[in-house]
Length: 424
Image 1 (cartoon, rainbow, N blue to C red):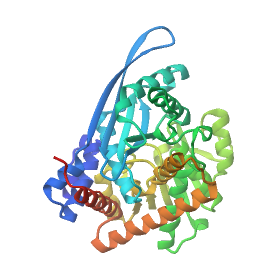
Image 2: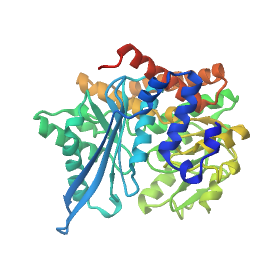
Image 3: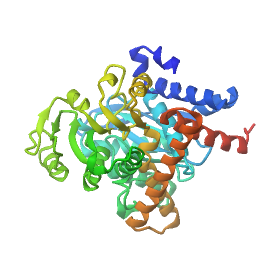
Image 4: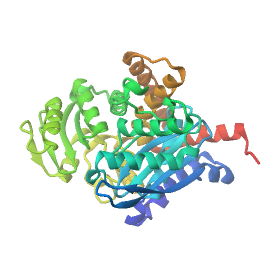
């Protein structure tokens, strides 16, 4: 990855540049035709909308929203919508591309998309968020639909936001269309097991990675960065499975217990206080130092660019399971490879969420819903098979797991495009 090592820090932290660097490596190793490579790397659509909203105090404000549809070669575009003050088009482009590759890695019939609105949910009321969501949806209406583009929750959005999107879309098309979004409330066509799906998928691939090292969960110390839906659920499920969660890192601090944290108690404490700080079952520790604790599994489950050239050399984990999208930069990949760290890349590790989103979409279209045991069984089957596909591909082509995942995904999407041909 010589190209990656020549990046400036600013380039290294740009998620679109990071996505392109990995793409170029994988495409080169596959020997893809230059024209086909251009098709694969270029988004199908990039939509920018401007959302006028009347705030609760009567002021008018205009918010910027994005939706990038990267690929529809294998099926409808699929991807979350995030609300954050630092959302950028480059970030949404990268996340949309990662969704394309993620869906291809686990071999479900979706393409990739991502959306975002530049706003700060922390300072907006629920009524203001609803008005933003409904106007954003109305602006995107021609580009959404069960056979076109199916959004889902992401950072700072949830099942209520999905309910607003579903209702807005349904009112415009004059019929209730539950399959237009996933991650909805159960009473509106949501799926059992969806809330836990991404965290459960992380645990499943960690189980498979431990088997490669002849280890049991009971002997694995885990550090989790991010304690939201993904990190919190992964912590809960992994602790139930016998993993020892020794540290949890959040934006306002970190908590540590070398004997293992009581995760249910920590979740209750966070719910009651709004923070993991001052948890009586652990000691406060510096956020950065917690990242460098010796452990078997480090699970970054928050945002991009957590592991970079600036800190990768200090990581002391044997396995990194990427619960977040893009937590490791291309330059950091090279440093971690030299240290012998086994990485379960994001487009595999956190694919449990989109897999159960696929199950939800199927259930909505059938009008028939599955029990949670069936959902979890089918999720485990897909995640285990996908882990084996990636690691087998890595061994066959003598590449790391990330490039193997990209190569596998590119191969599958390219094959679909070749079969379909280019419409002219």
